[in-house]
Image (cartoon, rainbow, N blue to C red):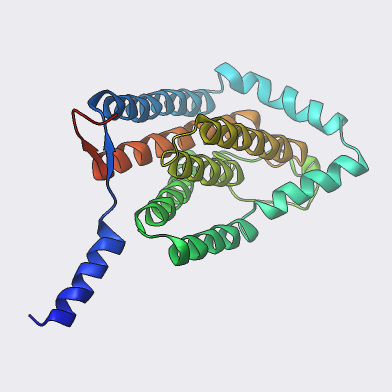
Length: 244
Protein backbone atom coordinates (compact mmCIF):
# COMPACT_ATOMS: atom_id res chain seq x y z
CA UNK A 1 0.00 0.00 0.00
CA UNK A 2 1.33 3.41 -0.93
CA UNK A 3 2.26 6.10 1.57
CA UNK A 4 -0.55 8.49 0.47
CA UNK A 5 -3.08 5.67 0.86
CA UNK A 6 -1.77 4.88 4.32
CA UNK A 7 -1.91 8.56 5.20
CA UNK A 8 -5.53 8.85 4.08
CA UNK A 9 -6.44 5.73 6.02
CA UNK A 10 -4.70 7.06 9.12
CA UNK A 11 -6.50 10.40 8.84
CA UNK A 12 -9.84 8.63 8.40
CA UNK A 13 -9.16 6.44 11.43
CA UNK A 14 -8.12 9.39 13.56
CA UNK A 15 -11.08 11.55 12.62
CA UNK A 16 -13.86 8.99 12.55
CA UNK A 17 -12.83 6.22 14.92
CA UNK A 18 -10.35 7.43 17.49
CA UNK A 19 -11.29 9.48 20.53
CA UNK A 20 -9.87 8.39 23.84
CA UNK A 21 -10.20 9.75 27.36
CA UNK A 22 -7.94 8.65 30.17
CA UNK A 23 -9.75 8.07 33.47
CA UNK A 24 -9.17 6.47 36.82
CA UNK A 25 -11.07 3.20 37.35
CA UNK A 26 -13.51 4.76 39.82
CA UNK A 27 -14.40 7.52 37.36
CA UNK A 28 -15.12 4.95 34.66
CA UNK A 29 -17.28 2.95 37.04
CA UNK A 30 -19.14 6.12 37.99
CA UNK A 31 -20.06 6.78 34.37
CA UNK A 32 -21.17 3.19 33.89
CA UNK A 33 -23.34 3.37 37.00
CA UNK A 34 -24.87 6.64 35.85
CA UNK A 35 -25.61 5.29 32.39
CA UNK A 36 -27.12 1.99 33.51
CA UNK A 37 -28.96 3.77 36.32
CA UNK A 38 -30.62 6.15 33.86
CA UNK A 39 -31.55 3.25 31.60
CA UNK A 40 -33.07 1.37 34.53
CA UNK A 41 -35.05 4.35 35.83
CA UNK A 42 -36.22 5.21 32.32
CA UNK A 43 -37.37 1.67 31.57
CA UNK A 44 -39.29 1.38 34.85
CA UNK A 45 -40.98 4.76 34.43
CA UNK A 46 -41.79 4.25 30.77
CA UNK A 47 -43.24 0.81 31.45
CA UNK A 48 -45.30 2.24 34.30
CA UNK A 49 -46.70 5.09 32.20
CA UNK A 50 -47.47 2.74 29.32
CA UNK A 51 -49.31 0.35 31.64
CA UNK A 52 -51.24 3.21 33.22
CA UNK A 53 -52.29 4.56 29.83
CA UNK A 54 -53.35 1.09 28.67
CA UNK A 55 -55.43 0.49 31.81
CA UNK A 56 -56.61 4.05 32.49
CA UNK A 57 -55.16 4.00 36.00
CA UNK A 58 -52.45 5.80 37.97
CA UNK A 59 -51.52 9.28 36.84
CA UNK A 60 -53.89 9.09 33.87
CA UNK A 61 -56.69 10.16 36.23
CA UNK A 62 -54.96 13.56 36.32
CA UNK A 63 -54.82 13.93 32.54
CA UNK A 64 -58.27 15.53 32.00
CA UNK A 65 -57.87 17.66 35.12
CA UNK A 66 -54.52 19.05 33.97
CA UNK A 67 -55.80 19.56 30.42
CA UNK A 68 -58.78 21.56 31.65
CA UNK A 69 -56.60 23.61 34.01
CA UNK A 70 -54.31 24.68 31.19
CA UNK A 71 -57.31 25.43 29.00
CA UNK A 72 -58.66 27.82 31.63
CA UNK A 73 -55.28 29.59 31.99
CA UNK A 74 -54.92 30.56 28.33
CA UNK A 75 -54.25 34.14 27.30
CA UNK A 76 -53.29 35.89 24.08
CA UNK A 77 -49.73 36.53 25.26
CA UNK A 78 -49.30 33.00 26.59
CA UNK A 79 -50.54 31.52 23.33
CA UNK A 80 -47.92 33.46 21.35
CA UNK A 81 -45.12 32.18 23.59
CA UNK A 82 -46.32 28.58 23.60
CA UNK A 83 -46.89 28.61 19.85
CA UNK A 84 -43.32 29.82 19.36
CA UNK A 85 -41.94 27.04 21.58
CA UNK A 86 -43.95 24.40 19.76
CA UNK A 87 -42.92 25.73 16.34
CA UNK A 88 -39.20 26.15 17.01
CA UNK A 89 -38.89 22.70 18.57
CA UNK A 90 -41.43 21.02 16.32
CA UNK A 91 -40.99 18.48 13.51
CA UNK A 92 -39.99 21.15 10.97
CA UNK A 93 -37.50 23.43 12.70
CA UNK A 94 -35.95 21.10 15.28
CA UNK A 95 -34.44 18.81 12.61
CA UNK A 96 -33.02 21.92 10.92
CA UNK A 97 -31.49 23.06 14.22
CA UNK A 98 -30.04 19.60 14.84
CA UNK A 99 -28.65 19.43 11.31
CA UNK A 100 -27.02 22.86 11.70
CA UNK A 101 -25.43 21.80 15.00
CA UNK A 102 -24.19 18.56 13.46
CA UNK A 103 -22.72 20.28 10.40
CA UNK A 104 -20.94 22.84 12.57
CA UNK A 105 -19.67 20.09 14.86
CA UNK A 106 -18.49 18.00 11.91
CA UNK A 107 -16.55 20.97 10.55
CA UNK A 108 -14.96 22.06 13.83
CA UNK A 109 -14.44 18.78 15.67
CA UNK A 110 -11.13 17.00 15.73
CA UNK A 111 -13.00 13.72 16.08
CA UNK A 112 -16.47 12.98 14.72
CA UNK A 113 -17.46 10.42 17.33
CA UNK A 114 -19.58 12.79 19.42
CA UNK A 115 -21.65 14.36 16.60
CA UNK A 116 -22.23 10.87 15.19
CA UNK A 117 -23.38 9.75 18.64
CA UNK A 118 -25.72 12.75 18.90
CA UNK A 119 -27.21 12.00 15.49
CA UNK A 120 -27.65 8.34 16.41
CA UNK A 121 -29.31 9.17 19.71
CA UNK A 122 -31.75 11.56 18.06
CA UNK A 123 -32.61 9.01 15.38
CA UNK A 124 -33.22 6.24 17.92
CA UNK A 125 -35.39 8.57 19.99
CA UNK A 126 -37.59 9.60 17.08
CA UNK A 127 -37.95 6.05 15.76
CA UNK A 128 -38.91 4.90 19.26
CA UNK A 129 -41.64 7.54 19.43
CA UNK A 130 -43.12 6.40 16.12
CA UNK A 131 -42.99 2.74 17.11
CA UNK A 132 -44.57 3.25 20.53
CA UNK A 133 -47.22 5.61 19.15
CA UNK A 134 -48.45 2.99 16.69
CA UNK A 135 -48.37 0.25 19.30
CA UNK A 136 -50.25 2.15 22.02
CA UNK A 137 -52.51 4.14 19.65
CA UNK A 138 -53.64 6.66 22.26
CA UNK A 139 -55.97 9.40 21.11
CA UNK A 140 -55.14 13.06 21.67
CA UNK A 141 -57.29 15.44 23.74
CA UNK A 142 -60.56 16.57 22.12
CA UNK A 143 -60.25 18.83 19.06
CA UNK A 144 -61.82 21.73 20.94
CA UNK A 145 -58.76 21.76 23.21
CA UNK A 146 -56.35 22.21 20.29
CA UNK A 147 -55.40 25.82 19.68
CA UNK A 148 -53.53 25.46 16.40
CA UNK A 149 -55.90 23.25 14.45
CA UNK A 150 -56.83 19.57 14.63
CA UNK A 151 -54.20 16.83 14.83
CA UNK A 152 -55.35 13.28 14.25
CA UNK A 153 -52.05 11.52 14.96
CA UNK A 154 -51.48 9.43 18.07
CA UNK A 155 -50.68 11.16 21.34
CA UNK A 156 -48.42 8.80 23.33
CA UNK A 157 -45.59 9.69 23.71
CA UNK A 158 -44.97 13.30 22.70
CA UNK A 159 -42.57 13.70 19.79
CA UNK A 160 -41.97 17.35 20.67
CA UNK A 161 -40.97 16.58 24.25
CA UNK A 162 -38.89 13.55 23.27
CA UNK A 163 -37.01 15.52 20.63
CA UNK A 164 -36.20 18.42 22.94
CA UNK A 165 -35.24 16.08 25.78
CA UNK A 166 -32.95 13.97 23.62
CA UNK A 167 -31.28 16.94 21.95
CA UNK A 168 -30.50 18.95 25.06
CA UNK A 169 -29.65 16.05 27.38
CA UNK A 170 -27.38 14.24 24.91
CA UNK A 171 -25.67 17.44 23.77
CA UNK A 172 -25.09 18.51 27.36
CA UNK A 173 -23.51 15.19 28.26
CA UNK A 174 -21.30 15.06 25.16
CA UNK A 175 -20.00 18.57 25.83
CA UNK A 176 -19.76 18.50 29.62
CA UNK A 177 -18.14 15.06 29.74
CA UNK A 178 -15.04 16.51 28.06
CA UNK A 179 -14.76 19.43 30.48
CA UNK A 180 -13.16 19.30 33.89
CA UNK A 181 -15.35 22.08 35.29
CA UNK A 182 -18.60 20.98 36.94
CA UNK A 183 -20.18 24.30 35.99
CA UNK A 184 -20.59 22.99 32.44
CA UNK A 185 -22.46 19.96 33.73
CA UNK A 186 -24.66 21.88 36.16
CA UNK A 187 -25.38 24.72 33.75
CA UNK A 188 -26.02 22.41 30.82
CA UNK A 189 -28.45 20.16 32.63
CA UNK A 190 -30.19 23.16 34.23
CA UNK A 191 -30.74 24.57 30.74
CA UNK A 192 -31.91 21.16 29.54
CA UNK A 193 -34.44 20.84 32.35
CA UNK A 194 -35.72 24.34 31.64
CA UNK A 195 -36.19 23.61 27.93
CA UNK A 196 -37.88 20.28 28.65
CA UNK A 197 -40.24 21.87 31.18
CA UNK A 198 -41.05 24.65 28.72
CA UNK A 199 -41.92 22.16 26.00
CA UNK A 200 -44.08 20.11 28.36
CA UNK A 201 -46.02 23.21 29.36
CA UNK A 202 -46.36 24.26 25.72
CA UNK A 203 -47.82 20.91 24.63
CA UNK A 204 -50.28 20.86 27.52
CA UNK A 205 -51.21 24.52 27.11
CA UNK A 206 -51.86 24.16 23.37
CA UNK A 207 -54.05 21.12 23.99
CA UNK A 208 -52.22 18.46 21.99
CA UNK A 209 -51.08 16.08 24.71
CA UNK A 210 -52.04 14.59 28.03
CA UNK A 211 -49.74 14.95 31.03
CA UNK A 212 -48.75 11.28 30.96
CA UNK A 213 -47.74 11.59 27.28
CA UNK A 214 -45.13 14.16 28.19
CA UNK A 215 -43.86 12.32 31.27
CA UNK A 216 -43.46 9.14 29.24
CA UNK A 217 -41.41 11.12 26.72
CA UNK A 218 -39.00 12.24 29.43
CA UNK A 219 -38.62 8.66 30.68
CA UNK A 220 -37.91 7.52 27.11
CA UNK A 221 -35.25 10.23 26.84
CA UNK A 222 -33.61 8.93 30.02
CA UNK A 223 -33.22 5.53 28.36
CA UNK A 224 -31.61 7.12 25.30
CA UNK A 225 -29.33 9.33 27.42
CA UNK A 226 -28.25 6.39 29.57
CA UNK A 227 -27.50 4.35 26.46
CA UNK A 228 -25.41 7.18 25.01
CA UNK A 229 -23.42 7.45 28.26
CA UNK A 230 -22.73 3.70 28.34
CA UNK A 231 -21.76 3.51 24.65
CA UNK A 232 -19.57 6.60 24.86
CA UNK A 233 -17.85 5.36 28.01
CA UNK A 234 -17.18 1.90 26.61
CA UNK A 235 -15.94 3.37 23.34
CA UNK A 236 -13.74 6.25 24.49
CA UNK A 237 -12.56 5.75 28.08
CA UNK A 238 -9.13 4.28 28.66
CA UNK A 239 -8.55 3.20 32.26
CA UNK A 240 -5.18 3.82 33.82
CA UNK A 241 -4.50 3.23 37.47
CA UNK A 242 -2.35 6.35 37.70
CA UNK A 243 -4.95 8.59 35.97
CA UNK A 244 -6.32 11.34 38.06
